[in-house]
Image (cartoon, rainbow over all chains, first blue to last red; front, side):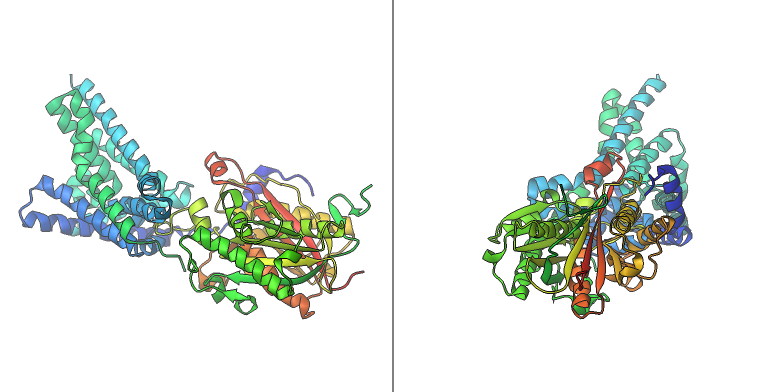
Length: 147
Length: 118
Length: 339
């Protein structure tokens, strides 16, 4: 057979690939993502009603959402939501918790230190590195510009 | 109305993530990192605060909201403690979420086993 | 002089070895698929009483070899070589299975092309007079492959439409210098071909040129035509890869559309079982060949088959470093009649 031109082949393959149903995926992401956020608002209002101030509520809300997402991941439900919702259940903080619990569970047989504890942060680690890293950078920049 | 706004803003942020995932080869890990970093930057330049004011949990629950908490915490801490605040502010403001994710994650991993897919 | 060679890449076996027995064990999902009646055993859950999926995969391979031996009515000590491989790092499923089988062992790595690779090497060892009985085996497991190559099972991600479903299952063939049909008559060994595909979720397209190349080369070397075959079946190209392979072969002037199929398409009902493009993994061509195709050969519903197992030679490291995915394919010609 003749040697394959990689560029031509890539174009040829691209035409064969079924296109993801973006509109359908986006509707699902919108609905599920929206629902999770609305639920977050419900929690916020609820804890404020029971005496927490605004600042405490802004900590309590993610803590409760993270707990629920971790539980649903453990029960084997979150991956089924994610299959439909895509980014709708990845982008909220619950997706962050799912990305921690799912590898932690899966690597239990490799031990509790190098398995569970190390693998917990395969996705969450980079999020913290870039999140905290950029916040420190912003803090220093803010300090310099303030003067 | 508050709930409608949260639903709408949260939904839109997720749709942006979905379009990125379907149109590019970005993995969920890349999306999460990008969204947190965007949250930090948008807050620093003052764009994210109005979105939070409008959308409430719709803006704080998605991952850019995590970035928002980090950046907001850092700026408040710098105002109070100067340079030290740049290092402590972000983690302080988000400590609850990080600790919860670590502890609940660990507990769930100990209790449950992954189920095979059908 | 290598007098058994034919053309550039093909070996014509002078004393074609017989496939005297095969065996196949599959997981629950495969056991619900269209070929469920052809498998020897269907396990009820994907741990099969083991502590980890890796141990389960190793057990699958160990048990499938034992089952093939009992189907052939021979014992371990009568087998000269075990040729086996799998997808796990350092092929532990195979070597850990072999530590409990008292058979001299060669470990192979050809990714998902291992079934045809082991049959190729086994039949040449027998024809060369180095062995009388050889066991060829391979396995794959959905959950071990997912955690090695992709995401944890409980991670809430979406599988792209081009992605394939790794088959949980193992298959084994027993080759013998004496015995009846079916026989392995030709072996065409493929070259590694890299068409530059980088998307690990589109392995069918990465392997298709290697498959097309080895099939075309097989025709050129042997002088056989597509119509000489009742079935030409590739390993795990799935729907997109199969279509591309067929078109690439057609460009070279051979029309295989009437006899061509793919194990990855046969094993699942893609629509009902939500497997997207189709099945994949070493176990895919292993269970389809040793379960379905072999039985069709025995009952003479098929008389001449070209098995072309296909492999994507990537590793998690190479994928992360942005390397493209090289493909490999090996063809084994199996016939009820020796010309």
